[in-house]
Length: 424
Image (cartoon, rainbow, N blue to C red; front, side):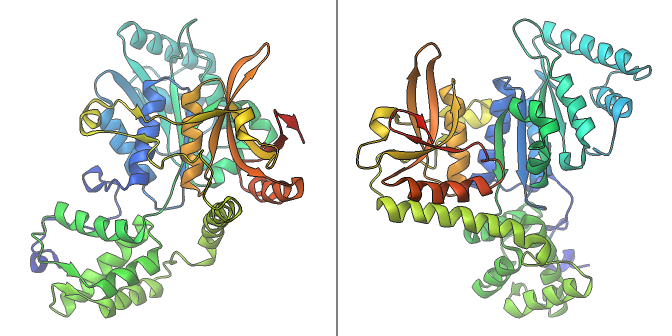
């Protein structure tokens, strides 16, 4: 009802995942890059998580559009499936005509399809949205599909997309084999205050605004306070704010209009970002940032092993080709990373591939951890790249931080090491 008044071609704050409206903050761009890297490098399993409404579905839809003709894709939006029904849905999404028969018939048909794609130098990726709703048995079924391979290559790349509960489900003992196969994990964070403003004007521009629709600084602050940077909530409150502006016949939207929009949403029972359902997520983010601050206080920002926040990035040329550039990351030997004055460190993970260590470091930095990579030559096992956190003077000090890190989902395997790797 307000489109003509504002001179818009369509609603700028619709909740549908329209890729034309996708705003790529640095975090959203990194998420997209991680997914694309996992597909291009045939990394097997990739997991993308994020709070409700952060834009996960829009990112995966944009990813599918970006893959090109050399990759077949299947996007499952309804994960409430089991057994043969799940397999039939996968076959249908890949465009495989005959989806009848028993489980073995379905898997054989999928395998033949994937082999045919390989012969044509094409890849295949299965993307499952809202994967936190998959049962453990269904997730195990998905893991078994990753066994479809030749002697040299995986035939199917699998991306699981879901809310933070997906991490909790993957940590169950039943799903340990699947959890161990996940090579890339990325957690999508809400928008910052600056990105929230850019997001709003980006959507207005796509909807046809010529710049006449403006928000006051107070209005933008109120929107961010309400949404905490979650795109879905930004859309909801901005849509109601435009209605309030239309009622007042004003192109300039102020704080009072945002408050009217919030009141309208509250009457319909729409929860804000600070509602009890969302408090646990923000507590996790605050804890991560707190640990980052503790690290800086302890080491006074003097550590030479800080990783750039742009560890993974793209240039204008690579945005067209889809190829990622890994900027150099300084690594150090274990002897260099632990001195006699600060002998204790927290060992988070280890990889044979330095690129995977870089990806892990970049993910942890997004959570506020200034991690570094320690190169370790293990006799009989070769070179390993350890993702490390901190150089502590005392074991008690290291243990206190370790307890907090292990309390976070996904870091239960972290441990304290001393000197050249003596376990504690």
